[in-house]
Image (tube, rainbow, N blue to C red; front, side):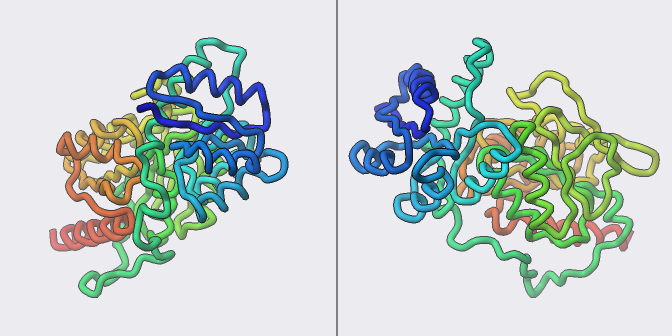
Amino acid sequence: MAIKVLVIDDSALMRALLTEIINGAPDLEVVGSAPDPIVAREMIKSLKPDVLTLDIEMPKMDGLEFLGRLMKLRPMPVIMISSMTELGSGATLQALELGAVDFLPKPRMENISLLKEYSAEIREKIRAAFGARLKSTVAAKPAPLVAAPRPNMPCAALSARLLNEKIIAIGASTGGTEAIKDVLATLPAQVPGIVIVQHMPETFTASFAKRLDSLSKVRVIEAQGGEKIEPGHAYLAPGHSHMLVKKSGNGYVTELTKEEPVNRHRPAVDVLFRSVASLMKGNAIGVILTGMGKDGAQGLLQMREAGAWTIGQNQESCVVYGMPREAALLGAIDEVVPLSEVSERIMSRLRALDRQGQRS
């Protein structure tokens, strides 16, 4: 049976284009299209779609207000489709916080090859959304703003040696904007440098970095390339480039490259993880979070084989259990934990490594 999709957009041309793209797959069917949320509300009741595509700027009620009401009253998978502008990126991030599963920019019709690539991507995202765990069911309770230490694991300060020689590498895709936010928001300011790849368009990563920075004790920036990786700082790969870690003097720096996509992504998690595996050996912690596909699995395996400690998000707390699943199947993960425990496990491992270093 085909996955039933309802398209919501105030542009008749966009509704027609999205309908044609989605109906081009035998396992997908657009059961209706609505010009605004008011009409969509009645169509949801009568057509019972499995997945919605939702624009942000619409008449009568904007997409964010509609999404907020929908997720409270009738939670269902939603993919946001909005224009790629700085304003649109901020609104899209807000939509993900409200419970949208994923997002895409509006398709561009001037280039046939790009349109074909877009068509494949939106179909894949609809399939993933259909099987996604919605935000309201991902966890029994949200992660606290500050991670509470367990009684047997006091929050002792980490040594300067450990802070400067270790690196934490994080990779995520679908559902990752909220997962990364939850991890960073529960880490203390005193942590080794963090490098992050999240699959998203280049017009979104700057806004995402600013959002993370406002919610975290660590300083979060969008990497420009050449930044010294410092303790208490996190560096997010920009949406247009792969990010690697390179040695520079007595420390490490970020490096950006526009080489071909890996696993259809640029930035790719595998590119980051492989550079960390090659350079850092056992001086790293690798974390793979919720996401569609297999990007990061091979790189995490290389990190583990090089001596790094690796953590994977468990199935029950993932929006889409794709990337962590592929990593687990490869034997790339040392410990599998719920999202709410990821930051705690990172800190526990760092403290253990610090004690080992002080004894040696």
